[in-house]
Structures are given as C-alpha cells and as structure tokens.
Image (cartoon, rainbow, N blue to C red; front, side, top):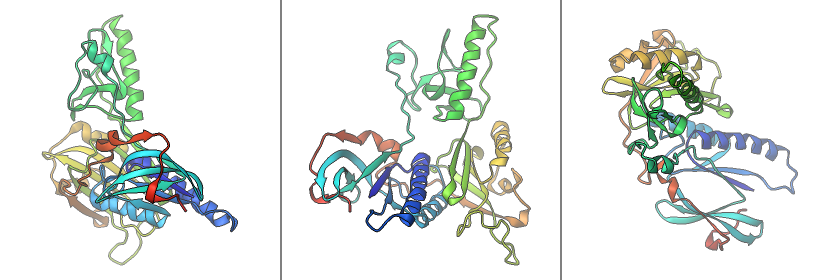
Length: 346
C-alpha cells in the first residue's frame, strides 16, 4: 500500500513522520500475505520545510526523514487528483505531477497537508472595508479595529505589529490571543472607550517526534531572509559528546536560527530550545541593531566554546516551480478518470 502526503510545510512533515512511524510498526508485525505500507511526501520545494528553514537545516530534516522511512519526492507539483479505475490492487488515486517532465503518480491514499490559509474577504470588500493587497486579509489597526465599531481578528486580519510592521499571521496562538483582545476591545468601545493594543508575539510550535525535534518559531520565518544559526557543537575539543543522543546522526541537535533584515532580527526559530521562547520574544520586542557576530550571545544557549555559528545569505535556491503555498491553487479534484500509463500502486 502506498500513502502520499502532499505538502512540504510543517503540517505535511509532521503527518509524514507520524505515518512512517505507524508504517514501520505495521510492516514489522504484518503477516507475509499482507502488503507493506510505503509513505511518500511530495512537494514543490527542494527539501521539506525549505520555505522556512535555511537550506542546510531543511536538508538535514530530509536526511533524517529518509532514515525513518519517508520517501521524499522533491520539486514535483501535483496539479490534479482523480480516482483511477480499478487495477490489480483495486481503486486508487491518480495524481498528475509536473517536474522536469509531466508524469502520473498513483497511491492507495492521499493526504492533502497544506498549511496555507487564504482568508475569504469577499463580503468585507463589498462592504467597503480596506483589504491588504500584499498580505491579504482585512486591514485593521493594533487594536484589531477595521473601522468604527467593526473588528477583525485571527487569520483574516492584517494588523500592524510595532516591531515587524504590517503582517497577517496564520497561527493558532495568534488566532486565540487576537480574538480575546478584539473581544475585549469590542466590549470596551461600548463602555469607557478604552482600547488595548496587541503586543503579543505569536509563536508556532511543531513537534517532529520521530526525529527528536521540537521547533518553536516567532516573527517572520522565511528562508529568503539571511540567517545566522547558533548551534551547540555535538562534540568538544576532546571528542566528548556534549548533548547525548538527542538526535542521532545529526549535527543540529540544539540551536537558534535568527532571521535578519537590515541588521534587525525579524524572526527566530528555536530548535530543541523551547525553554528560551520568552527570551526570544524579548529580543523581537526590543528590536536592537545586531551584527552576525553579536548574535552568538544574544540569547544565552551554552558556553562560548561549545557554540558554532552558521550563516546563510538570503536563499536563491528556491525551486523554479515555486512553493507549496504559491502553487496550491493549481490543484484540482476531478471525477473518475483512467490512470493511463501510471498504473495502479504495487
């Protein structure tokens, strides 16, 4: 049996690893008459999470996933899904795939795992509310008021962040906290008129348990930005393992990745360093001018002689196919259709 996960973001990567874990358990105990289960992850980028992480880190994630049973199919864009006629293994799902050439891929099951959220602003636009042409969503101020007495919050709101500028955030943490503040301001506007500004810096959390990675990120996480990674070396000068088997066969066990624009930190990824989240929020909040060399000690991670710094300029290696988010609108679901030369899964 073949299961294909479409999407190279955090959701697609989490789902792929979780399924691979279950597949390994099943394959180890199945009877000879039962088919093996294979997990494939397909995405338009060159490696999973490459839209967010520097190239060396996303490649490391890909290598770890491969060792844990996920077959990665990179730089392939799924443009069509349809049910195929029965083959030797019964009905299956056929996918038209675009890469260097066009091809057809077949699977028993397909999981659409995109984390893209495009707000439906049709009613707001027709009502005369201002829409953000760059970020999408309804333009609001820092209290989430769109116009007198009208509020918008969550993923549909393009709000002003005093540290990072105007932005729209697709995060659960943001949806909860912005909704609470917007509700408070709605009630206050009808009483004493007091309004509170939004100062919370929302975080997104991803747990890739099968490869021993816990990731928290805040601010603008975009691999097009220049990054400075501060990592705890896996071994000291005497060859002693400093962290133990946190993540087998990987040099990136615990660290911090800073995202820079004009000598300002605009985003931070905490890699197995979630205990430093509040310190990261403080750094974004105070927003000092920084240099790559000074970031080694911006957030205390370990003694200096344990740390290594890895810099990467703004990424120019993005696949010419674009990203999952940019191309998702091309995916179509169609009725039953012959699979053609692709054949049913084995």
